[in-house]
Structure formats: structure tokens, C-alpha cells
View (cartoon, rainbow, N blue to C red):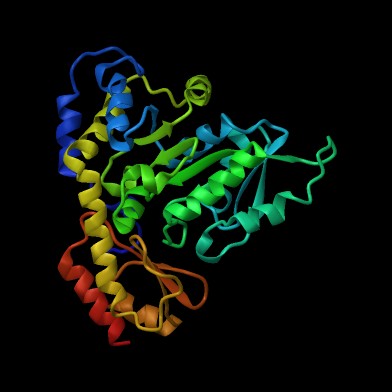
Amino acid sequence: MQFLSDNAAAVHPTVWEALKAADSPDSPYDGDALSAALDERFAQVFDKPCTVLWTATGTAANCLALATMVQPHGAVVCHEDAHIEVDEGGAPGFFLHGAKLMLCEGAGAKLSPRAIRDMIDPIRNDVHQVQPHAISITQASEYGCSYRPAEVEAIAALASERGLGLHMDGARFANAVAFLDCAPAVAAGPVDALSFGFIKNGGLGAEAIVFFDQNLADVARYRRKRAGHLQSKGRFLAAQLHALLEGDIWLHNARHANAAAQEIAQACDGRLLYPVEANELFVRCTVAEREALRDRGFGFYDWGEDAARFVTAWNTREEDALSLAKAIASL
């Protein structure tokens, strides 16, 4: 009964079928029919024009998107617990050729306009200090908290006022959309670029960078090639994206994962460190309690000295979620 990560979940059957169907000759790189159709397919999802580039990893999606907005002498404003700071092995500095990350605090790993202003307002506008070029937020956040549309709008207004790019790390964007029960465009807000996660939601090895600014997309095409991420058989990445978008499978998957998380959350009375607004639970547990859960067959990660993280997925079995809920309740 694994609750380690949605990264480890099985590949959705529709994805396997789509990969097999794509196994026929077509133009290489991103010149194939499936890749060419991504812009229109995502435009239907967001109800507005966009340009979509596939990548193989979320790290590449985040960094390639930010590299279009940030010069090497600039900086990205992000939360101190953001994935680009904590879990990408310095990739932002590598892809952005030394650009800096400016780290802000915020409850639930979410930024606020006030936190951003507190960070950037003291910076003098001269060559002796690194200047902010972009803001990056995560939907849902690293602690499983979803930005409300008004929160995204407020950050976007500040970004526009200060002339900063706005990027959204959407590794669990589907889970946020499912929780908010709103249109994808509303959950994303007026961002310039969105790293739309698919691997955590049933994909095999494909993510999407959705650009709402064509000029940024044009830059990203060159940077993707230079970084070694323009795969020669790109149709197999595009096929995965199409497969999970078809019939809103991506949303069905996210709703299932969220529902499983809510089932477990009901048994965590007084133990939750953060509200459960996606498919992650951060639960206070002693060392002995964690050992007891592992002895009963549950897999999960420790979260510091006194907590555990449990992550549900598109294929989490109801009986496993119920078993975990009962086990936590009995501690």
C-alpha cells in the first residue's frame, strides 16, 4: 500500500494505447502531427490561444519556462520551499546561467503580494544589486495548498505593475483544478507560462509548457534544443498529453486522487499540518507511530522528525485509502 509519491503511480492505460497508436512514421522532433495539434488542443482546455512545448521532466519544464523570462543577471522570486529551490538540484541556476532565486516565506508554501513586496521593495535599481525578473508560484503548492483565483490575480497584478514575468509550476495543476472545481483558465489565472504536470497524473514521461505569450514560446524552442530536450521522436511525448486530455481523463484522475486524500484526511483529526486541498497529506506522527504504520504495510516518506507525508494517486485503491485512514485513526 504505497503512498510514497504520485510520481511512482502506474501509467494510465490510455497512455499506453496512445503510445502504441503513435508508433508509425511521422516527421521527427516536434514536426509530427500530434505535436502540431497541441496548441489547438490546449487552447480548448484554456479557452484562449496558447503555444505548447512538450518536455520529458517537470524540472525541464520549470527551468525552460523561467529561462525565457529571466536573464543571467536577474532573479526569480519564489517561496523558500518551492520545488525549484528545494528539489531540482540547482537546475534553475544551470538553465538560467547563474540567475538567482529570491526566497520568500508564506503559509502553506504559498506566496502573497505582501511577501513579494517585502522581498523586492528594498532592492535598489542599480547594477550593484540583482534585480527580480520573474515570479514563480506553485499550483497546488508544495504543501498541497491550492491558490484561490483571487490570490493568483493579486500576484499577477503585482507582476504586471513591476514588469515581472509570472510562471506557474503546475506539477499538480490537475489536482488544484479538481479541488477548486473551476475552469483551468481560472485556476491558472493570467500567468505567462504554466508547467502543466502529467507524469504525476498518469503520464509516462511527458510534461507540457503552456505559453500564453507567443514571444516566450519562440525563445523556449531554441533553449529546449540547446538544453538537449528536443527529443527526435517527439510524437511519443505529444501522444501522452493528448491521451490524458481526451475526455478530461486528467481531471477524472485528479478527482480520484483528491477523493482518496480526503478519505484519509477525515481520520487525521488534529494531526494535519496543512489543509488537504489536493492529493498530499502532511500528518503529525511520532517515530513509533510511523514504524507502526510501516509494519502494517504502508509506504510513505518521513517529513522531518515528527511528521509523515502521504500522497495519493490516480490509481490509489479505495480499500488502501480506507485501510490507511483506519490505521491512522487507531494510533
